[in-house]
Amino acid sequence: MQLDPTELTPVVNRLKRAQGQLAAVTRMLEEGGDCRAIVTQLAAVSKALDKAGFAIIASGLEQCLVREDTTMDRKELEKLFLSLA
Image (cartoon, rainbow, N blue to C red; front, top):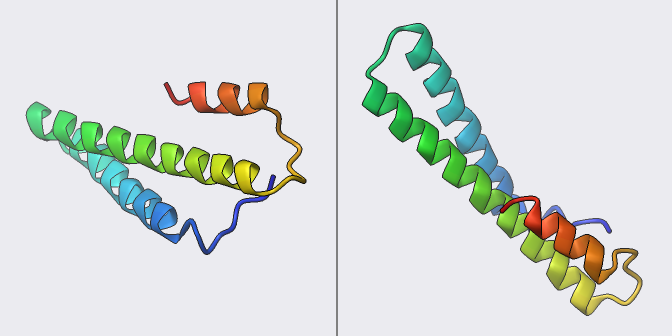
């Protein structure tokens, strides 16, 4: 199943922001930053990645419901969805 890149532009943007946040976390760790600030930023990165993953899965599920030529069955989609849980 191929995802439509134009539909996923917001997801790509979210992942780029998460990448920047993760770089900030790394920098904070290397510079001996405040533990609370580091954990807060790390939690934000984790949440952004979760949201991006769910958006990708939702897009894939939608395509499977609309298109009949999909190669993924229900079990594969369930496994993919649960991999984010």
